[in-house]
Amino acid sequence: MDRFRLFFQHFQNSSESVMNGICLLLAAVTIKLYSSFDFNCPCLARYNTLYGLGLLLTPPLALFLCGLLVNRQSVVMVEEWCRPEGLRRKDSGIIWYMCSSVLQRALAAPMVWILLALLDGKCFVCAFSNSVDPEKFLDFANMTPSQVQLFLAKVPCKEDELVRDNPARKAVSRYLRCLSQAIGWSITLLLIVAAFLARCLRPCFDQTVLLQRRYWSNYVDLEQKLFDETCCEHARDFAHRCVLHFFASMQSELRARGLRRDLGEEPPEPLVDLDGGSGKAHLRAVCSQEQVDHLLSTWYSSKPPLDLAASPGFWGAGLSHRAPMVAPGTRLSQHTDV
Image 1 (cartoon, helix red, strand yellow):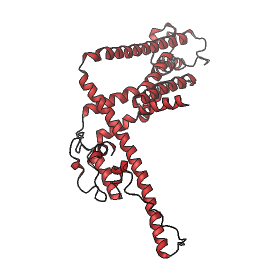
Image 2 (tube, rainbow, N blue to C red):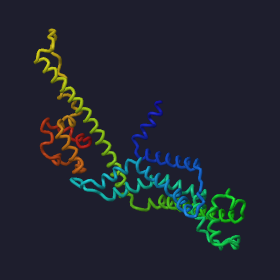
Image 3 (cartoon, helix red, strand yellow):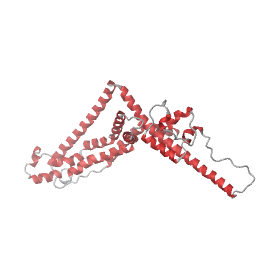
Image 4 (cartoon, one colour):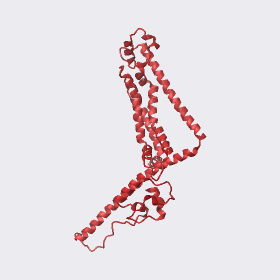
């Protein structure tokens, strides 16, 4: 159980490992879906191409959208692209780096489906059986053009009475299947060569820009995570303090109306402790709905500059007018947590 917990924590803390694992999972699901899929071509001249190309391209599009949905960096990338510049400038290089990373992972499962479909050949035969040139096959010499089109439309359906055990059907089907497999293996080889060249040629270029973009793309993702976690922590603490305030005020009201029995006990300790919890001083400084709304709108409209040594005055005066300012020793946590 402890090993599973450590394994889960590793994947939870490593965003890149999570995305790679999800890509492998989608690819495995793609293979399973395609192997369990029962392909049946309509064998009609008007619908063969539409049906074949639809099965060749529509599932990859759905898998691509699923890859974008499960990838957290796609949302972070769009937010970084659309946010106002404010006090922090936007770097287009970081956005393009995140875009390339998202696309590489999202295209894994669709490419697996397309390659499987091309190597299998059924979708290709169904889609392009009507496009075969009859002059390449001698068996069509004694047929009229309408009979040729009807025959070619029935090629994917080998159990049809018109084409059953017909050598012309087998020749056309073999021709299209070989062409489909040739395209599939060509795409596979092209992808392998592209990956090989990218792997080998990457050290030949300047690594400084790549390291910088990788660092800041990870920073943007982690910053958003930490901000969400801090907001949840502040909401929980704020709700807890509001509930304690409510019960404390109810005790005072009951005592003032004489509804509380006086048993000679010592007065209870106050339920609300606003001075304690120095570790949450940066959270307790925001203690009203107006301040929370202003903080959230400020975070979206003008994120703080990436300079921890800069003066915190960019937040504007009056944000924490209800609570004392945080001590200078906690300034670093104020920049990194909120």
